[in-house]
Length: 300
Ligand SMILES: [Ca+2]
Image (spheres, rainbow, N blue to C red):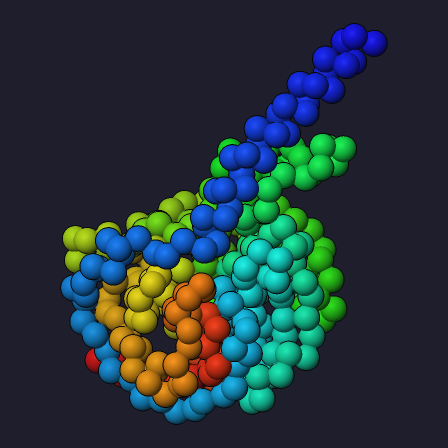
């Protein structure tokens, strides 16, 4: 009886300690502005021109963290703990025609598709689970010590099908012909086996000899990796075998084509690249942006 009581006290103390550390950490990650040093990043690679060939409505409440185009529709992962979602969106009208809420203690991040499944990264749980939810409690503890979770969904129903864990953060997600490509907010991209999610290798991204940190939303476009870079309004075009940035698309001008978006308490930075490979159409948007833009890049 005494041993049982001591056991309960020890588990309780563990729960309190974990909550005390996890809660402030998660709060910071959801609301803190980007570090000042990030804003000093300068282009070394060339800057490609572009033209705007289309503008479409976009839900201005969508904190876009992942965007893909598939069979005539956009699929979007939105963030913010407690209101994260996975949604199917009609491109032409911006109408959300299907939606699934992410666990309210998770944060929707990168999104891609692999052989009939959507794959969404869902890191950053809020706090720890109640102590009697032992499985979730220990999963939270794993997250706190560096692991995070992703979920696969059936594309037609948006029903969850499986989940997987990975070490560290999960930000952007895309894929080439045989691997998932995942960012964690650093200058590194990971290649994952798309069936087992086992890490196959890493790529560090450089612009000249300078590391490009804060790689965010990703898209694989005609053999190159396109990456948003937090908190910039530019897209880096990355050579996937070397990690070198071969050029940038500077999209700062797009904000002048939208009504002003409040910059507090959330940060309406550009984040969201989707590619219609069959139609060779490139779509971009941002967190809380009221528009999706279709652009044509002049790669020369
Ligand atoms: Ca994307």
